[in-house]
Length: 277
Ligand code: SF4
Image (cartoon, rainbow, N blue to C red):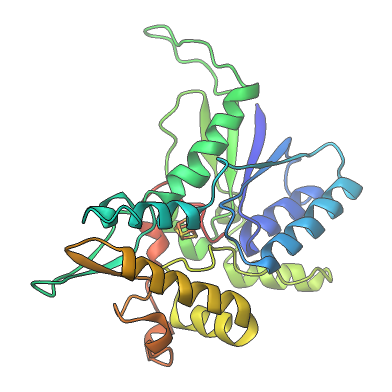
């Protein structure tokens, strides 16, 4: 069976890859990073380091980067540029909405994870794995074991594969490792702390993550604020769109609220999640 990691280049999937490189987990055959084109510079820098380390210490693990040829940002701006009042409906990002007439809050259904990450990885795998058609009554062995860097504290994000020819494997859950355990594992071995992987203006950011962006990456913060302003100008006729969950302009959002304590992880709500890990 071919072992393939969905590499998000965040804390958990980085730990999985390095554990495989160091022999603490089975040897992976492939690690695939799906590029949304809008990760912070720190993530791309970390990914370069990770690829280099892997090539040096485990050259047999094949590394791939895949993309659909446009970015999450371009996609969202294109959708909201339509100006026909339907923009919000076509945006892929889970943007927050406020109905202009009724003030009713809503959220755009998230499709970006699937379109930018899940599907391109699946398509890439299908490039080198050709599952035969399954005959009625047959129960053949799966061909692919697809690994995800979901940690024990995110166990609710685990999914079952809906394809007979592959099954999903969650090594961190099996090893009973939380995100903190991953960070400690990395630290003990002298590895650099991976940044959080997520699109620069992903609406699922917590206030703590927005603060970090504002304080540590002022240029990317500015880009997120500008994007937030652009989608509002261009957004649907019926609703205003926002990247911050309070449905206020990002620049004006109160980022000091105590929501960070025990905050819900909004990445749970759809797709075999790979954003953020
Ligand atoms: S990080 Fe956020 S915006 Fe980017 S693909 Fe994932 S859910 Fe969508």
